[in-house]
Image (tube, rainbow, N blue to C red):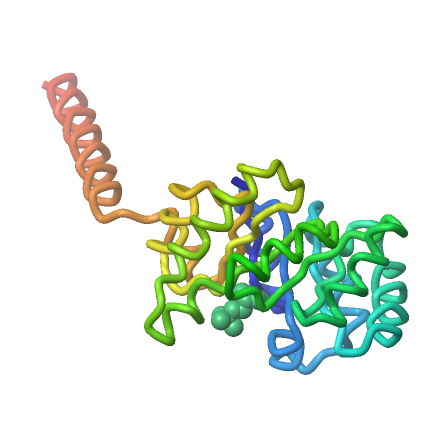
Length: 222
Ligand code: G3P
């Protein structure tokens, strides 16, 4: 499973990249707006920080507008993946962009049928938003699982990128159902490394070791 960081905050992305387990980054207009920095320079800097794919989203919602923006965004860096909303004009644009060899991520996916449209358009990734489905009382992981199953049935090449992750349990569940990628907010990402029993166990190891070393030293000293 590939792990992406869902952020446009350069400090978060630097810290995540240093962990040694991050494969890429996803951004969206809200994450970019939150940072208040220039869009293109932010995407270029993220590409300098992380070796893997970096998703950057268009703002246009019409076919021609999406195409023009997508080609401009794709030119920022060879590793940029153009994020396009999963609307009819977006799917149509992705079908064209796929023919041009531009990597795409159809986002704001909330159903199996939408995901099938993304795969038929040749999207590189499709992003089911599991957290937002949970937010309205649906089971986001169940939708994710069905998408993974349908993609496996037909051998679709589009990668299933679990998004809108709210907590470590979403990461575990996405892995269990076989998502290709999970994109994780930095705050959730940091929690993935920790367990209280690990901390307790390490403390005990070190305590026993140092006590034994002290006893040896005292013994030697007579
Ligand atoms: O960036 C796409 C997605 O992960 C955003 O999810 O629901 O946290 O805004 P959300």
